[in-house]
Length: 142
Image 1 (cartoon, helix red, strand yellow):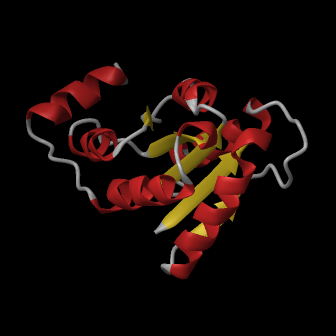
Image 2 (tube, rainbow, N blue to C red):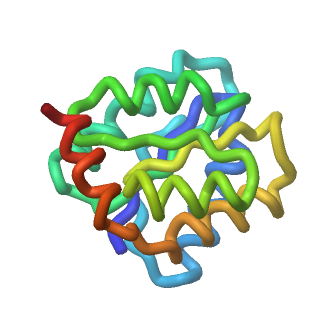
Image 3 (cartoon, rainbow, N blue to C red):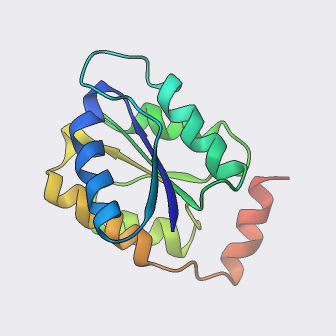
């Protein structure tokens, strides 16, 4: 799968771990930055991830910050992006099953690295259920 990843300084460490995890699984990962833990403004690195997803250049996006809130908000400003802020296994599963989330947002300050990796895997593995949920997804872009 083609996946774009981006973070601000507060999500940098997990971005690097998740990027390597995805590469090790054979995914084609595009790193949109940031490239260190030096303080940056998150929209500069999150918007390119969301735009790549919306343009179909990648199939999915992973965005990270301290809480993941700003990154989800930024991503959802781009039409066609359905970014979900995930914090536990059920939120990662449901965002795919019910919302067809094409971007996952995670907060490095909110969970362990092990949990973040587990949530990414659940998000990758869980299919969209379609059905009644499809109509709701279509309404998002009306």
